[in-house]
Image 1 (cartoon, one colour):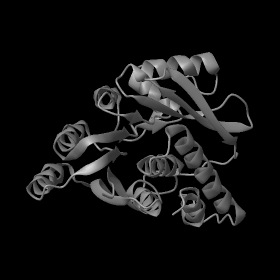
Image 2: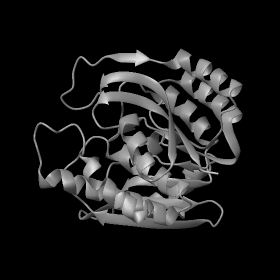
Image 3: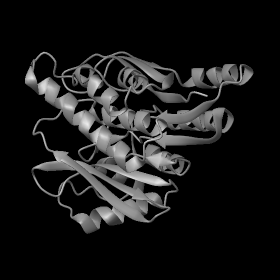
Length: 282
């Protein structure tokens, strides 16, 4: 039987992030991708976008869940990204309890902030709620900022070493997830990558790629979505992280080749999809 991923996050109609990334990327890996929008925005909220619209879909979530229960909808993976509120987390937990297949996996990208700051609308109360939610996950994928919020510790920026990252991984695993994938890790100016901790084997691994000294919106969503797609294709997590890291690098490189200053709001990941499909033989 073919596998199904349910991804729960917002739709930013313009901006190449969240569901507009997750749906095409996971689908390109050959996995049926179902969606549950947490909100609909005219654009994402970063950079030059102003006066964006926001439609909160919190109260639609239990109605959708009721419909799925009545038609016996089940999913092998439930992958969450941007969740708009603590109340939505409660509703999503209900969906996990009712719609996740036996032996299914919960994969959480605890989207809250970056560069030491919360995104608009989030605070430590939300981080505390997310902390409990992460305990239900098989895999969590925070960046360093989100890790500091989950653990309620100061964000120290780039001033860290391997022993600090190892300590953070252990503390994150103590929240309850079986595997921790920590993004934005770098020990020198030329590399950027990911640290992976497995609670079963008590092992830590790293995956690095060449650092591109330009930032783009949506790359975290690209990484998370391609990682989910690889895992749903039964790829071991270490290889899945490598594929996802390389895919993001390819997408950024494709964007940089013909960089258009009018296209500042995301990366042209569409041009890198053939790379991802080749990696997974799709």
